[in-house]
Amino acid sequence: MGAKPAGKLSDFDFDLPDDLIAVRPAKPRSSSRLLLAQGGGITDRHVYDLPDMLRPGDRLVLNDTKVIPARLTGVRHRPSADGAGAARIEATLLDPRADGTWGALIKPLRKVRDGEVIVFSDDLSATVTGRDDGQATLSFNLTGDDFDAALNAVGAMPLPPYIAAKRPADEADKEDYQTYWAARTGAVAAPTASLHFDGPLLEKLAAMGVTFTHVTLHVGAGTFLPVKVDDIADHKMHAEWGEVSQKAADEINATKAAGGRVIPVGTTALRLIESAATDTGLGPWRGETDIFITPGFAFRVADGLMTNFHLPKSTLMMLVSALMGRDRIMEIYDHAIAERYRFFSYGDSSLLLP
Image 1 (tube, rainbow, N blue to C red):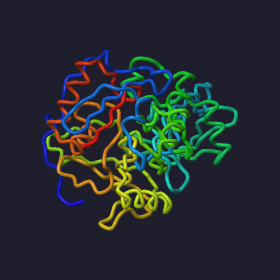
Image 2 (cartoon, rainbow, N blue to C red):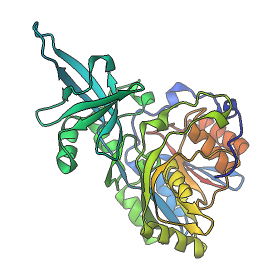
Image 3 (cartoon, rainbow, N blue to C red):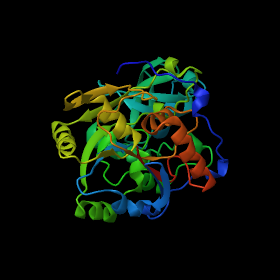
């Protein structure tokens, strides 16, 4: 991983008009606009034009994590003489732990004690097994498919803070905030570049000779954490669980060997394959990654990136600057704002080919 990240937070700042923050996605998914940055040029296209921009032999790397409806409202009951032992509790699940428990944000945290039970529905409840650093650890009464079904019945999608500030999550988000190929439960945020794909587009790409590889990175709430240090070398990156299977590694290595391009769809897929990269190619990999990609990073696998437009001063802004160069990214973002592209999770997309 080598050198420490270098740079100042202000290098990754820009002014974004509030009305460019998308609160709903484009319909159909593939009708979103797409900014193509290739060579020194910038072209305004749409996601459905991807077959014109990709080549036979290219491989798209897709994150197959599945977002859980992680926002829960429940009641904590406590025996009391005056019957005032009930308190309304809001929980946002943050990350699944190896022991089967979940880390969660609890509001208000002062209203729960270790060992107490929060009831979310007739089927779903959780015991508070620990509290630390503003978070609680929850042990649910259900596991596996039973847990998924009970959670789907009562949970709301964990919309990013910049959307949640403008409107509450609703039923439409259960479909809109989930990728077409979502398979492995565990994310509390969507890999949003993937939200632009639908069945017809995937079929068209496959027919022209583009191939697909699935990897898994369970996107955590840390993806929205602001960078609070001026010297980015001092930023502590959040960790997320991911897996690259032997099959996925073999497919990606074969594409590289054949001279095809490996293009991750989304920063999560990119961070994962660069975490799994070795000097001799990609190997199977699983575990927690806290890879922090900033300008000066040597990319070993990714030949480009499809990604949405990111928050000012965010780690993702640093990642795209590492791929394209900071000045080039600022030129791309100036163009996107001038042309009124829609930003963030439900916004438009870009294809960055350095």
